[in-house]
Image (cartoon, rainbow, N blue to C red; front, side, top):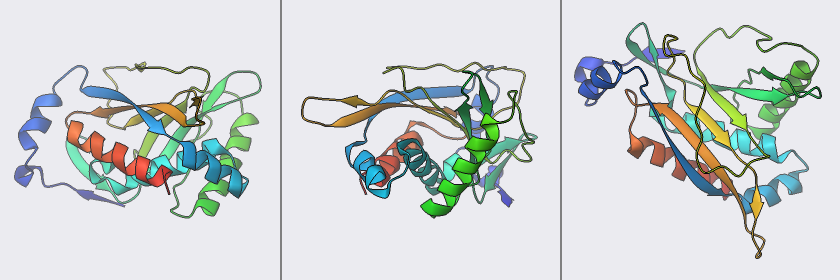
Amino acid sequence: MKTLLDIENWNRKEHFLFFKQFEEPFFGITTTIDCTKAYVKSKQLGTSFFVYYLHKTIAAVNTIESFRYRIIDDKIYIFDTIDVSATILRDDESFGFSLIEYSPYFDVFSANTFAEIERIKKTPGLFTREFPSENVIHFSAIPWVNFTSLSHARSYTFPDSCPKISFGKMMIDDNGKRTMSMSVHVHHGLMDGLHVGQFADCFQELMNE
């Protein structure tokens, strides 16, 4: 379900009209996330750390309203729920785009994710299913690289307003603290640095639970 945002009475109307004209309206930040507690919790649960922080990511996305905004036919809609399209690596080193339905309950989300991973691994190609809506984030993990910045391949002629969130290699310091780099790219017509900061803070709080 989605609701039309009243742009005429929106305090960011001018910002939206300004940035939506850009050839590249996305901006991005890279920050470092403390994942020490989250890693321990995932092991206590006997689950995949990737699936665990993927769930925390999409939970934070659904918490911050601006991350649920999407531009469709020059109108802004607020989706009730956002799902996730994550890149899934296969044994032959190719990857496919997944579609994983969000649930606030980790057990449900975990089952959805593992089922989708298995489906992708058995299905060749990049696009292996239909994507019926734009209520997704684009998610990727690059666990081989401790990056300090990140860019994305984009077609400027293709309408896109979905946030893109990526994680790097987990690093461990001499005191056992675990960290990961996180990159967040978002449409500037829909949000500003303040909102990305709110997302980062929310995500870190969820990782510390």
